[in-house]
Each structure stands twice: as structure tokens, then as C-alpha cells.
Length: 392
Image (cartoon, rainbow, N blue to C red):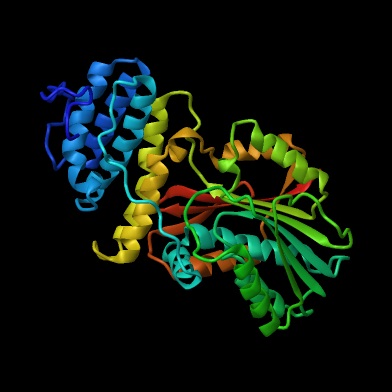
């Protein structure tokens, strides 16, 4: 930090931490120890120790805060920002070290498509969900399909579904309608065009594929006006952004009352729901390693796409979203069951399509089944889960 957090001119002398030294080249293990040591001090309301450890972390993070440094330095920088914000909430005399990063920049639709394609993080869920949607309506009584979409990826899922429906052996449905919840969480990625423009482009694409299509963005997505449809509710990386721990239960109750044919839930598979700040920081630190490590396997250090993707990850750390509430697939399973749903298994077609998708990416990516969930893995570590449900 540019100065002592209590605004005197003498930097605090850090406490020794076993296996770590005050260096600017600490490895990930030592950075995690420092973060946990700082978290413990914050939980114990020990301002002196918190300040000392933050001083060490700031020495490590200084290059990362300026956009340089290695992965460990950037991680240290982002976690330090989050911990300093927490310290400032506890002790008003803690001043911000001025480490805030630049805001996220809106992307063009073309650039966002490349961003989403960079890792299978989003496409895994898109692929599993789209095939489950097609399987759910094949041979059904409805000739109209309505997808109620709760997602943060700015409709990047739907061109592939439209294309697949156009190639269905029995032809596309007589109408595909997609309703988007316009009250989107304020998280990256951001678009530089309004949702209405996205709808126009999707409509034009559907027309080129011979699919009758309607698009609606609304702040009240639970108000439906046509019962003669197969309704699919699609939740992609959405539920964790609901405002408090009880909100998902109310959301799922509303979904159940709609009587959908199928509900798809895709989200990040990590448990950052502990009351302990240390446990949340540890889980978050080890989880965020997954996309960082994956990016470094195939993109150069100065590649703009790598830098931008990591910056978005860093913003999620900095504002505390990953350290405040993120539930595992197993925890979501219990929530959804309590809300009155039973699991629907993904078919072999979905499994094969996901495998084909992963073949296009680095060899560290894999997929496994956990009960009826599909789970995206990186070097054996769970990263994203996909699950499908029907009302009891």
C-alpha cells in the first residue's frame, strides 16, 4: 500500500508466517497462507495483524495491481482489494490503498462471442441445456416452444439452439419464443448494444434458418400470456446472484408455479457459503485457479483476450461476489428438491455433444456424471455443473 493503512509513515513489520518470506515472488501456496492469515485477523477484529499481513500482500501485489506481474501477483492484488474493503467496513480509520482496477468495458456482439468461446465455461452449459431442450420437446404434444431465460451471457446460447431446431428431423416448432429477464445482475460480460438490438439480430438469424421466432425482454418474466406452449426455464449462472440466501427458494417457487416442462440449472460448482471468512477465501482462491490455469495453457501472457478474461475474474473477486455466496452443485440439488422438483437425466445425445465440444478445447477439460448432473472439470477439479429438473 502507498502508506500505512492507518495513515502514518512507517510501514508495519509483518509477522513471520511459516514457509513464507516477505518477497515479491511468493508462490500460490504462500499467497494463500497470507490471505488466510489476514482473513483470520479480520474475523478476530485484530487490526494490527491485518495491517501487517496486508503490507506484505501489497508488496507482492504491486505489479499485479498495475496490470503486470504473474498470475500469483494478480490474484494477490484482487484478493487484497476485497480484504481491504472488508477492513474498511470494520474500521473506518482503514483507508483504501488506491488499488481499484478499471471498470469492465462493454463488448461488441462479435467480441463477446469470442470471449464466450475462449473457455468451455459457458458453452458447456449452453450445449447441455440446448440438447436437453430439444429432447424435452421431441415427440411432445406442443408445437410451440417458449424458453424463459435467466442468464448473464447476453443471449449467446440461442443461435446454436435456433440452428439445431432448424435441422430437427421433424422440422422446427411452429414458433420459438424466448423471453429474457431484463433485470440482469450487473456482472461481466457487458454488451455495447441494448437487448432490443440483440433481439433483432436473433430474429434475423432465425428467419435465415426458417424458424418462426419471437423475442421479448421484460422486467416481469413470470407473467406469461400463452398456455399452448412447451415452457422451458433456463437458469445459466443466475441463481447465485439473487440478493440473499432465501431469495433462491422464492425464485424456485415462482418457477414451479409456472408448470414448466423442464427447468435447467447451470452454475459454478464451488462451496463458498461458509460463515467463516477464512474458509470462503480458501475455497475461492483454489476455485479461481481453474480458469486462470486453463487460460495459461494456450494463450500468451500478453494476449488481449487472456488479459481481459482475467480482469473480469478479478473484478468478481474484488467486489466480493465469489467470497460471499457460491453454492456447490450438491447444495443446489437439495434446494431444488425442497422446492418441489425431481431430477431429469441428460440423455446420451447431450453427453456426446458436450464431449464433442470439449474436444475443441485444451486437453485438461473433461466431463463426468454426478448422479444425473453433468459436471465440467479441469484437470479433475469440478468447475461447472449442469442439471435438469421437472416439477413433482
